[in-house]
Length: 310
Ligand SMILES: *[C@@H]1O[C@H](CO)[C@@H](O)[C@H](O)[C@H]1NC(C)=O
Ligand SMILES: *[C@@H]1O[C@H](CO)[C@@H](O)[C@H](O)[C@H]1NC(C)=O
Ligand SMILES: *[C@@H]1O[C@H](CO)[C@@H](O)[C@H](O)[C@H]1NC(C)=O
Ligand SMILES: *[C@@H]1O[C@H](CO)[C@@H](O)[C@H](O)[C@H]1NC(C)=O
Ligand SMILES: *[C@@H]1O[C@H](CO)[C@@H](O)[C@H](O)[C@H]1NC(C)=O
Ligand SMILES: *[C@@H]1O[C@H](CO)[C@@H](O)[C@H](O)[C@H]1NC(C)=O
Ligand SMILES: *[C@@H]1O[C@H](CO)[C@@H](O)[C@H](O)[C@H]1NC(C)=O
Image (tube, rainbow, N blue to C red; front, side, top):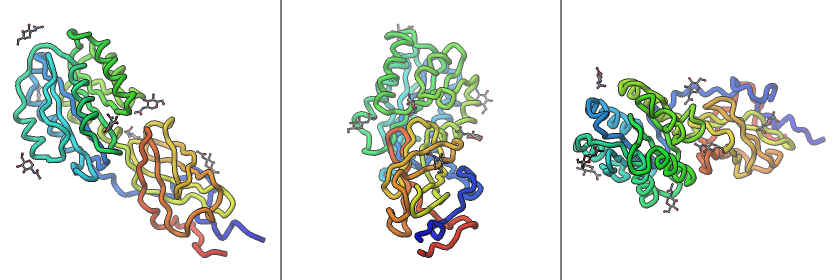
């Protein structure tokens, strides 16, 4: 009789028992995703008193990503007031980015958020890399009253989100919070930050960069039988959008469900370990139409049987 048990790699007592699949490595402190990031910053007179602190925020954003032309992030920087000024196009050169921030001009009257968003959209349209996640971070302390007002800002943002751009907003002031929530990607509980001070903004940067940084780091077996769908646990970050999640285990597409904001269960749709080549197993997780690949599963869980074929 052909038995499934010899293929048991981890017991499936509780399908979502992640303790069988521990991941204790600390996450990299910076986002190491393949991403093209545009930072869009308010430079209107209302924020002029905080010019130096906003400059510090911009520097902190540059240092929140692993910048690398080939595999990591590139960043572009735009500031806006009555119009938009591109301080830097997409670049992975940290010193050049920091220089462009130091050189930035003083604040001017008016707040044209839509101008900043349009400039960012153009940068991502003309300069993006194939497969890189397009991310936009917006900072504003005031409502757009010129050039179409808040409605225009929302419309431009809607167009960018339709193109797959993930928008994180940071609003400094209550009167702008509702518009910024509409501009942000969904869910706004993750992507729209309502803040009161620039200092507060500085303190939440690591957390908010992490939530838009979609990466998977580690996959491990939950179950593997000859004749039952494979189940794998994946640890990562930025896995916020459960509606978009999809997994490929060894190339076979299956379903995925979110356990918490850093953990997924992936099932292959085609049953059985025999459908996979022995040993090596790659797990891809798709979020927002892009795949991110987990490292090859490492040491099997302690409850594992041997890998021997029956
Ligand atoms: C700038 O940040 C410092 C702390 O780093 C704080 O004391 C100061 O009040 C801030 N200024 C403004 C205008 O936010
Ligand atoms: C990075 O930028 C700095 C400052 O602009 C420049 O001196 C340096 O040559 C650049 N490095 C590369 C690899 O382009
Ligand atoms: C903003 O300043 C420019 C000149 O720098 C001026 O032409 C314009 O009228 C000002 N706009 C407002 C709304 O104050
Ligand atoms: C990235 O560039 C390609 C063409 O180079 C374009 O089709 C795509 O829409 C761009 N992505 C975004 C988010 O603009
Ligand atoms: C998350 O999914 C919802 C529904 O499909 C979509 O409206 C939203 O734009 C997605 N958010 C991101 C960041 O992709
Ligand atoms: C993920 O969840 C943990 C608690 O489960 C929370 O502390 C953390 O802030 C969350 N991260 C994001 C990006 O939502
Ligand atoms: C994956 O498979 C397990 C065990 O068969 C099941 O409990 C779980 O609901 C499945 N998850 C998904 C997302 O299909």
